Structures are given as C-alpha cells and as structure tokens.
Length: 363
Image (tube, rainbow, N blue to C red):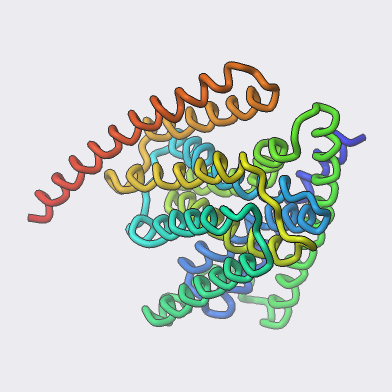
C-alpha cells in the first residue's frame, strides 16, 4: 500500500502541476504579460509547485531534512540530470539574458542561502528575506517586460489564446481559474501521500530522511521539469528547456525554502551534512553551469554527458555514504580533488577560447 500511495502521489503532482501551469500561464497572458516573463515565472514556478507542496507539508510536520533535502536535491537534479539529458537529445541554445543575469542570480542566491544557514538553521526571518526577494524578482521582471514594450505582451497573449477566442472573456477566466484550483488541490493531496510514504521508506531501508529527500523525493517532485524540458527540446523550443530549469531553481530557493522557513513551527534545523556538503554541491553545480552556458551560447551533447555523469556520481556517493560503505570516502575525494578541478580547468580553457573567437568575430 505505501508503494501504491507513493506512485499515486507522484502521478497526482505531475498532473496537478500540468493543470496549474496551463491555467496560470493562460491567465497571465490574458493579463498582458509577455511570453518571456510567463516562461521565467509562471511556467518555471508552476513546474516547481510539487517541491513547494512537499516542502511546505514537511515543514509543518517538523521534517526539516525532507524539506531542505527536497530543495537542494531538486536544484542539483535540475541542472545535472535534466539539462544533461535534454542536451543529449539535442544541443540546447542558451539566451544571453540567462548567461548575464538569471544564472548568476541563481549562483548568488545559492551562496546567500549557505551563508544564512551557517548558524545551523533557517529561521522565520531568513524565510521572509528569501520570499521577499522572490517577490522583488518577479515584480522586476514584469516591470522590465512592460517597459520594453506592451505590444509584444499583447501579441503574446493573442497568440496564446487563439484557440479560445470564440469564448467570452469571463468564461475563459473562469475555466482557467478552475484549472489552477484543481491543480493546486491535486498537488496538496499528492504531497501528503508522497511525504508520508517517503518517511516509511526511510524507516524500512534504515536510511535518513535527508537522503530520501535528496534523492527519491527530489527526483519525484522534479518530474514536471523533466517532462517540460524534454518536450520543449523535442519541439525545438530549447530556450524554454533551459529557462524552465533556471527559473525553477530560483523559485525553489527563494519561494519553496523561503515559505517553508516561515511556516515551520520552530524553523528548519540543518544537519552538518547539509551545510558542509550538500549546499556547497548545489553552489558548485550552478557555478559549473555558467561556463557551460557561456561557451558557444549552448550546451553541447558532450557537456550534457558530463553533467549526467556528475549526477550519477553524486547519487552513487549518497547511496554509499548512507550505507556507511568505506568506498564513499574514496569516491568523494575523487569527485572533489580530481573530477571537479579537471572539469573546471577544461571549462576555463573553453571560455577563454570562445571569448577570443567572439572578440575576433566582433572585430
């Protein structure tokens, strides 16, 4: 029965997220918000709704390890696995805005998250700061979008709603609002089932709730991002595939972790593993993505395999470490002292070469 509830919980969250994204994105375009802003906010935030539901439920239940592990694990999974797999399917084009602003912002926010967690917990004040930053970011995007031109926003809204122009405006608003409400309801119910069964799995397997949150729950709640990015890649909309991941990562930290920290009865206590290992890994992953995005303005298949290999190694380390396998230390040292420096050196060389090529072309 727990396995059935776990699978049913995942299914409910995937379908619920789809309804939420569909309804909210149409409502946004009806209000005249540009397609770019919809992609960076509504779609990205909507696909992160399962993380929001699960972490909020875990925070209210006092399961801080599942809550924080879900956020950190999802962010690592999004970049290493989703972008890696999507770029293997087809090389991904990266827009200049993501390189110059959004990804550096994710890196900065990740570093700030580590700094405020050095005291051993995320408190209510920390949550207010994080969530307020999300509101400022969203308002800023909308303001910039409208400043650049209301015409683009209006065209995007018309194009998005061509199929339903024959229906009255009020009916369209009502139907999309119903999609949003049903999606939210399915997310809440699915999150309850998922968290409860994940705790049972942790007890059965004698594995910590943190490891469950970093792996099983993180992967499960990231399924909407997987589906969205892969579908976007196959349709040739590769900028959406990348923007979805970057926007989701930003929402996970500022929105999901921020809200969870605010509503947790006693804050979110952090284990030494989260502070000393998992949060630094999340930062390192985002920093590795920056030079990959920069070189050629795309993620090649070779870079996709590299990202995927890192995720496999990270997951293997978590499993070995959870079982107190002595090989976990060797694997960890190999990742930190061999794989990461070599990767950083290669990416740095690629960045220097690409910058020279671009300078030559501009000249």
